[in-house]
Length: 151
Ligand SMILES: [Zn+2]
Image (cartoon, rainbow, N blue to C red):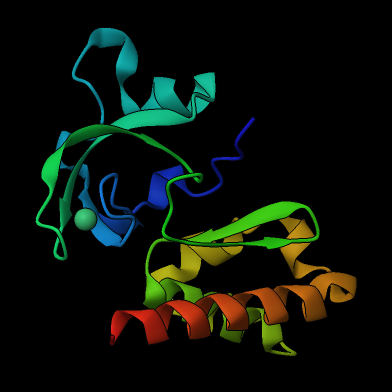
């Protein structure tokens, strides 16, 4: 099952893979949770479902539409660190995670916009023994996807 470690602090916009061209697409939470009694935000977190409805718009192929988002499988910014998926909402968030994981003091307050996200980052990614692997994966992710964007 997916560990939805940041549901409560999800931003209004984040990046997913475009269902058509696989480029980076914006996903908007306007149409996030189906407005039924049993599909509220709180229930969603408690039941541990790992899919929700999102409005996606792709700048590359101009796909727009509401689709089922599986998180973190559909996250655009994600990488694997020793068997677990580390994901970010955006490039900026990925850079914050990298900076935080690399830092020696691990001071969440240095990243005001991402405080909640860092406080709830699973211990797995904070372990000193995983620091090198996490740093390497994030660096690879940021480098490869940042380059691809400029082509
Ligand atoms: Zn697309």
